[in-house]
Length: 74
Image (tube, rainbow, N blue to C red; front, side):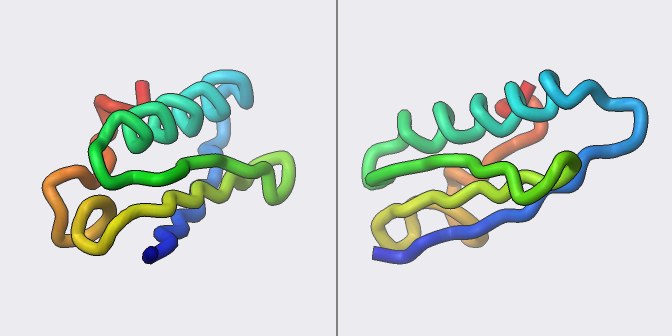
């Protein structure tokens, strides 16, 4: 099962709480897709989050219809 990894960096002026909530919303969006086994985010440091999504091939990530959208992260 492929593991899709994303690295997000917080922009200056963005609240860390909003940043974390956006990552949480992407994980929730991912887990709602059939074929996604797990989705979690991790703090790499105070300004960087890593998102890991475990999914069936072609279900999540590039070249799929379920890639996260900016609106899905809000």
